[in-house]
Image (cartoon, rainbow, N blue to C red; front, side):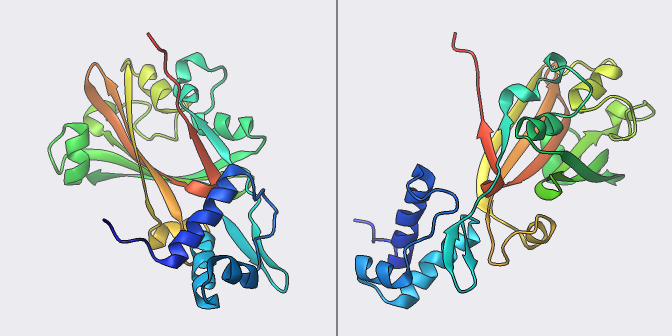
Length: 250
């Protein structure tokens, strides 16, 4: 039989489950250390480590002289249906629509530049390593709070010399609309989602707890007739996002 996880992880899992279920609602105070010690029969060192895990995940926050509370976070809902730019009114990005639906104001920062395609990205785009690609790095904010990072890569063999070569300079907004503008019809999008710990740069850019945080990483690729025309790594702070996927049942 596999060994049981350490006591502090068991306590963290118990508290996490109560937070996720709503038993401990946003703004609720966690049980005191003495109460947790009595409930689980552990030392205060163990309870401190358990609470530290939840703080690192962004689920709770300490208030000086008061205790530890479940964080009140306004999550942005990233709905798969909102990715379909052709069916959405207005010339705005899927991110802006997601944030507006959550009752918040969207903004973002970006920088673009031509680079030699890294090997791992080349495999996703179906180009040779070292081929010219346009890389654009983004930081997305909701009501001024950073919630998402993204790094996008587009083969310059597709966009070189067109009005959409620089992703943020034209009037078309979003990958699908931009490619439509140059006659490239995207007909498929593939997303793979994993969870991992935050990297140091992500902690700084997203203003995450210094002890680390849980991230959701979406590896997205847009295709036109089977050919990849853009791929991106989208990094989301797990405590600030909800992913919703829908598809027809035939």
